Length: 440
Image 1: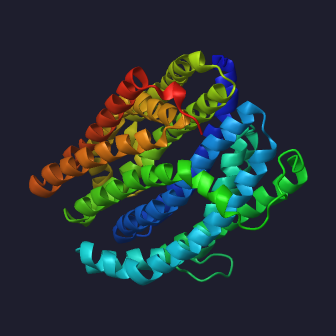
Image 2: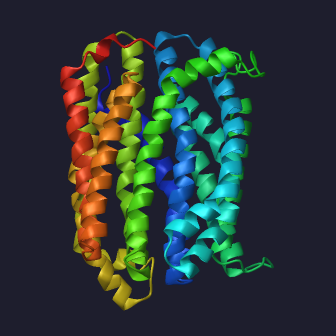
Image 3: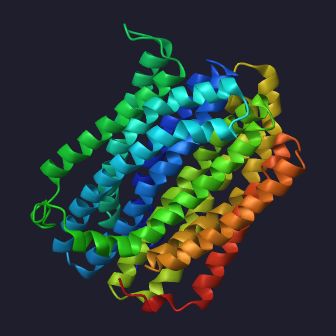
């Protein structure tokens, strides 16, 4: 059904959008790396905490995207706008709830798990501003789900470009106090990201009103809260919400464990994490494509195309990721200098960087097959896979990092456990389960 050329045509706008969008994380890390190691480490903890909350909304949008893709394949276009509108209304309500919980309880949580008082203070400075981004990012992910679900992904590139440019400018203004703005340091990085997210949502709204066929997709048919429609979306999305939340929570646990090793290991891990996003972007782009194309193929009744689609996507992903890995492996220093001027910090990063590069050999098929599983609509099985993986990952963190307290490079071995378990579970599911009978 889908050739490699067609898969690439759908994937590359998602990839470009992720590249540009992740410039936000890279920009934050690069800017703060020149402010200080405390700020660099604190932004990692606060950023992962915010990401854990954000992934609840993102997980809801993934479930919505699966439904949109299925309805698009079935040519039931009038149902798509209702899914987008009702999903957006639900996420606005959820954003208020999660904002309130974070505002009141995050300081107590952070104080109980962060050992360094200065890291705690910097973490809360960042988080106090960053949490406002939920109100914008939660709605924006529904627009992303809409365009991925109907396989019109080019607009994601433009939107991400707008967002990234805005973030670079706003961060420069507020971190360093340029052009008449106050010098806010780590808080300025958070404020810049929030303003960029607001601009991204505004762009999505204007583009959709002006360019999308709002009558074909019946966008304004139900602009009030429809509990029945939301419940139908949640029947799929509640599992993808938990599924998206779990890996970030375990990722947060990883960074907390690193923080207990010291401020230097935490700074190293934040730099390595930021570089890791360069590789995860193509992996994630092709994985998202797999979920959408599989959902569309099943909706069109072409079940026999599911596994060939995933195999083609894995091959294309390796064609991009392996040359990138080779380049960074051969010349790590120029990449690391983006984040720090410290020669000692740069040298300390290299061993951990090499360990990180290796796990992408298993992350590529693991991520694509896992998203193929989600694309079949069996999100409960996907959640079970994530649960099993999270337990194995958490145990690995506890025994390797908390108990053994090795060097920072050895700490990153736990990522092999995560991707190895996820790969194995997803492969067994696609080979043995009767996913082709799933109705949504």
